[in-house]
Length: 208
Image 1 (tube, helix red, strand yellow):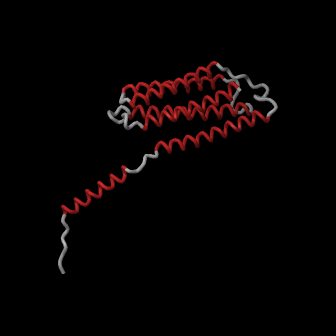
Image 2: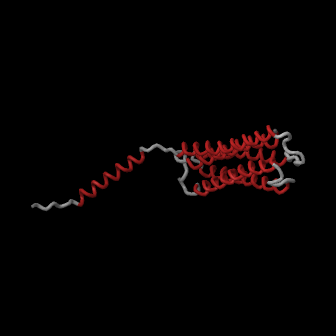
């Protein structure tokens, strides 16, 4: 019986070819991250739509809305907060535009401004909470108010943290560029979603 010997050079060459084939196969996979983000936002939107639907159902079925004795909501601070949040969406868009022009420094500046504007919105909301003349369990309107604004405030907080995370990662040279900027794009899409939800919420709670 003849013994068989393994040629180390051929083994290494085969391994190298297999690795190249694996990398090439991996690169052929489509990028589904944007699709996943959109599916996630649709799911979140359905939750908000359910809350909005419940609020409208309460309003339509109860004889008086808000219930008698409920203090009126102030419009000045929420109005300023609304303008601030809408403006922040344009600022966030500037960050995406800047990185698509390979202006990483400009993108960082716009991201920082957006995060600051989001933080101002949250501070304004907390200030409003501390000066409201009703609590979470005062009546059905009060409960709905705190649930809707609080749930949205949670999303704003997540958005601010996401923007700060993107801002932190953008410090690395070349991490984001005109060809590689999904993190900034995803943060922008999420921020626009938060903005649209607030516009609907503001109309329901403060104007309707």
